[in-house]
Length: 65
Image 1 (cartoon, rainbow, N blue to C red):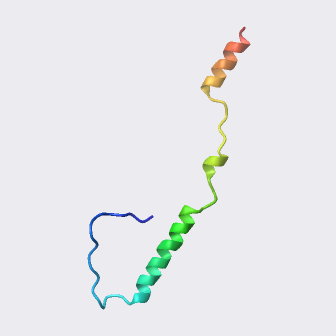
Image 2: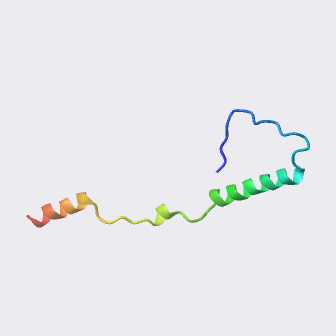
Image 3: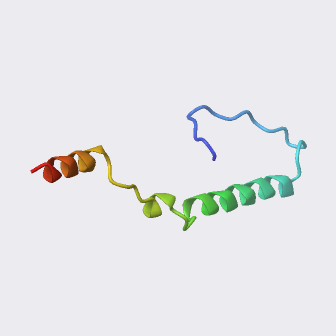
Protein backbone atom coordinates (compact mmCIF):
# COMPACT_ATOMS: atom_id res chain seq x y z
CA UNK A 1 0.00 0.00 0.00
CA UNK A 2 1.25 3.46 -0.79
CA UNK A 3 1.87 6.00 1.91
CA UNK A 4 1.41 9.73 1.61
CA UNK A 5 3.93 12.04 3.24
CA UNK A 6 4.20 15.80 3.46
CA UNK A 7 7.91 15.75 2.65
CA UNK A 8 8.83 16.53 -0.95
CA UNK A 9 10.31 13.63 -2.84
CA UNK A 10 13.80 13.90 -4.25
CA UNK A 11 13.81 15.20 -7.83
CA UNK A 12 14.57 12.66 -10.52
CA UNK A 13 17.43 13.38 -12.90
CA UNK A 14 16.12 14.24 -16.37
CA UNK A 15 17.76 11.29 -18.10
CA UNK A 16 17.47 8.68 -15.32
CA UNK A 17 14.34 6.86 -16.49
CA UNK A 18 12.32 6.92 -19.68
CA UNK A 19 8.71 8.11 -19.37
CA UNK A 20 7.44 4.59 -19.97
CA UNK A 21 8.97 3.51 -16.63
CA UNK A 22 7.11 6.27 -14.84
CA UNK A 23 3.89 5.47 -16.67
CA UNK A 24 4.34 1.80 -15.79
CA UNK A 25 4.76 2.69 -12.10
CA UNK A 26 1.64 4.87 -12.14
CA UNK A 27 -0.32 2.12 -13.88
CA UNK A 28 0.83 -0.47 -11.34
CA UNK A 29 -0.07 1.83 -8.43
CA UNK A 30 -3.62 2.39 -9.68
CA UNK A 31 -4.06 -1.29 -10.50
CA UNK A 32 -3.00 -2.29 -6.97
CA UNK A 33 -5.17 0.48 -5.51
CA UNK A 34 -8.30 -0.71 -7.31
CA UNK A 35 -7.65 -4.33 -6.37
CA UNK A 36 -7.27 -3.38 -2.69
CA UNK A 37 -10.08 -0.81 -2.57
CA UNK A 38 -12.73 -2.75 -4.45
CA UNK A 39 -11.96 -6.31 -3.39
CA UNK A 40 -15.39 -7.92 -2.91
CA UNK A 41 -14.13 -10.49 -0.38
CA UNK A 42 -14.89 -9.25 3.14
CA UNK A 43 -14.22 -12.06 5.63
CA UNK A 44 -15.63 -10.09 8.56
CA UNK A 45 -19.07 -10.26 6.94
CA UNK A 46 -18.99 -14.06 6.94
CA UNK A 47 -17.24 -14.69 10.24
CA UNK A 48 -19.64 -16.26 12.72
CA UNK A 49 -18.85 -16.60 16.38
CA UNK A 50 -20.35 -19.17 18.64
CA UNK A 51 -22.01 -18.44 21.96
CA UNK A 52 -19.67 -16.67 24.35
CA UNK A 53 -19.18 -16.90 28.12
CA UNK A 54 -22.15 -14.61 28.85
CA UNK A 55 -24.49 -16.93 26.97
CA UNK A 56 -23.08 -19.96 28.79
CA UNK A 57 -23.54 -18.26 32.17
CA UNK A 58 -27.11 -17.31 31.29
CA UNK A 59 -27.85 -20.88 30.24
CA UNK A 60 -26.39 -22.23 33.49
CA UNK A 61 -28.46 -19.85 35.61
CA UNK A 62 -31.70 -20.59 33.74
CA UNK A 63 -31.20 -24.36 33.91
CA UNK A 64 -30.73 -24.30 37.71
CA UNK A 65 -34.14 -22.68 38.31
